[in-house]
Length: 231
Image (cartoon, rainbow, N blue to C red):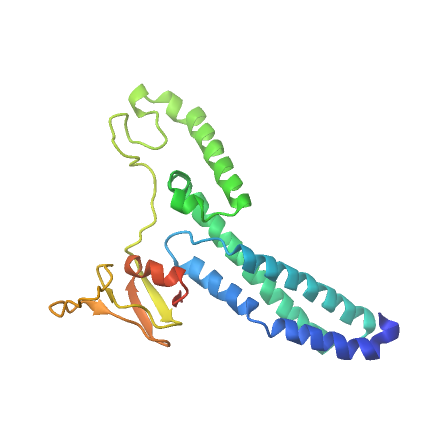
C-alpha cells in the first residue's frame, strides 16, 4: 500500500470522505438518542446497524492504511476520531437496549409488540435472562416461601395480573424535536378526525424545528414514523 501512496491517498481519501458524508452516522446518533430518551424499547434498527458496522470496518481499514503508508499523523488522528465516534454510538445504542431488556424482560417477553422489536440476539438474551433469574430466585427465595407466594410474576397466587412485573412508564415526559410536520393530535392521544372538534382546545401539531416537552404516549406513532426525534 505504501508503494502506491500517491495514487492511493487521492482515491482512498475521496472514497473515505464520501463514506463519512453519508447520513448513517447521523441516523445512528438519532437512533441512540431516541432509544436513550424513550421509556420503552424501540424497534431494532437492523438495516442501519448493518450499514454502520460495514462503515466502521472500512474506517478501520482506512486508518490502518494511513498508519502503514506514513501519512500525516494529524490526518490519521482525525480519521481515528471519526472511527471512535462511530464505535461509541454503536456500543452505546446496543448497551441502552440491553439495559431496558434487563429492566423489563418479563414485560417484553409476554408482549408480542415488544418481542417483535428485538433482534435475534436480543431475543436470545432476553430468554436467557428470564431463565437465569427465575432459577436464581427459585433457589434463593421462592422455594422458602409459602406455596401461594412462589411466583416470580405475581405477589400471590390470587393476583389476577402480573403485578410484580415492571412496565415502561409511557406517560413520562420527554423532550422532542420535530423533523417533519406531525399530524394533528389531541393531547390525550386521539387523532383529529375529518370533523374537527372546535370545542376542544387541547389539539397540538408540531412543525419542523419545534422543540417541545411533551407526554410520550400520545406521540409514540410520530416517533416511530420519524416525524419527531427525542433529545
